[in-house]
Image (cartoon, rainbow, N blue to C red):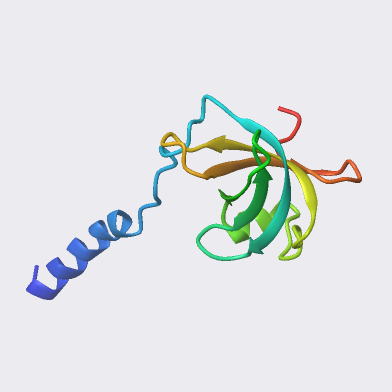
Length: 123
């Protein structure tokens, strides 16, 4: 086998390692938080969407949280659209919190004021 063929095979086998998906280990999947929130921004981006929300804590202090969702392609096939969440929307949202306690989480589901839901709400 010539040198170029060997190089091509090596690159072919290393490609999955290079494009490997990141882990969700930073989220505490054994717990979930459910809270009322106001949408600040919905980022319809790759590789994952982000929902920026304002949450008021027990001391009446508003804090911005970043909630990570899935990939646009998968979410689109599940009914999501770039305008699923609009700034100013008041929603109930469920997410897995971060292990380190920072203001971020992994999206589980959301309920809108009209009672409609998206994601895994009834689980």
